[in-house]
Image (cartoon, rainbow, N blue to C red):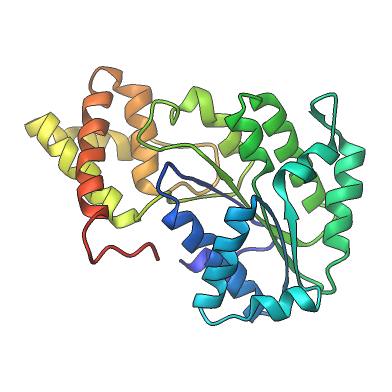
Length: 262
């Protein structure tokens, strides 16, 4: 994916993932690996399990994460501990965020940095959604003061009813790009097959309507995810049937032996 290799300056990326985290590990691993290859520093704020998965993926791609950790170019922080330090009475505190997270970025001995964080995802999963958006806004403000790329993740399944406009609009508005939560071409194929089966002869007219009227106010959103959001918002009577069938098709494709996350 081009944005993982040569992203735009101060890009703020987000990925939604369900129970299958293979694609998240592949994307974050590639994001970090490409940063090391370009001589950039890395900051990761994640759970121990995710940190280990990302380090393993960087190594699999041919990088030397252990050397980068040893020389300070690759810095690792615990998600829960860091989140606890930046919150006051359960609320992310701007001054603490600047001191702790901003300080971590400043400690990296490179001019350009790539950061991955999942504190926002933790807040979201705990039902603290206003706090998650507040923390996203703090990250965005920090990006106006420092040069770094940011990658976030949320435990949101694009096939679930949580993935609909009224719930995730604020999340999308705080990011420049949404990365596919799975194999993009497989999701596109699954969704098209489901629409054909449910809508029959009406499908081409609906596809034309989606193309003509879908004008999101957010950053870049992959086509399949954009179509799912459109269906939930504009065709609620049939959306669940289409998306449920698309999930069945996608699950079948993703279990094929030739399936690769990246």
